[in-house]
Length: 246
Image (cartoon, rainbow, N blue to C red; front, side):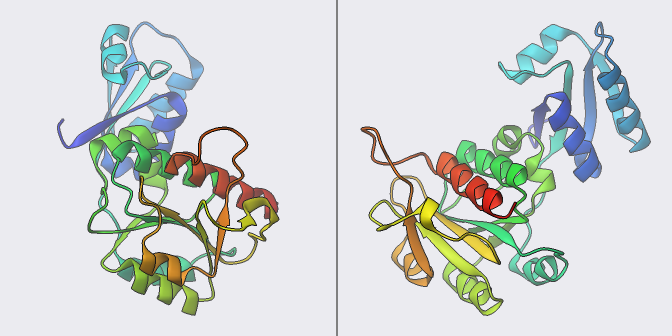
């Protein structure tokens, strides 16, 4: 199962089955556990043509590696990333103003997985990143994303700066994050068509990316550390945008 990722937990397994059942090879359920939610999950899997296996709790514990699996674990094939050709149709199909997360060179699969999970939770319609010098969808990314790699389109583009220009032509307002920015995130309007642009680990936004942002904002830091992990910062920004959108 080297090209597959174990997605642990009832909610995460359900999300994988609902949004990408064709990519789920098998659903593991704890064989000694009697739970209505597990029974419903088994029915959902069988209806989608996904094999259901009853396994020992010890096996679930071993594969989940400390995650709260709740007696359920789905083996998910790594989904294919979308391309920039898919962006136009994706935006045209939206019934509400777009909320996109753009990542400029995130290379840690744990960070990308966490960003996808936050994007799903906040209702972002896509996560966009460059194809080069950035992590793609991997088994580790899918495992950390806990089903969000199937529910949120991950779009890899050849040239991020060009994509930013194209999004601006489509009417999106691009907000980048930078520690030295003068404007506070919470004093910024995040309603309307929006792209939140986050820099990669350590280096932040590249110059060409920064120049294409309509505005730069900072997250207020009240303690001793100077910045947040990119996945944490992405979650903060996405949820502030969601709060403002009601």
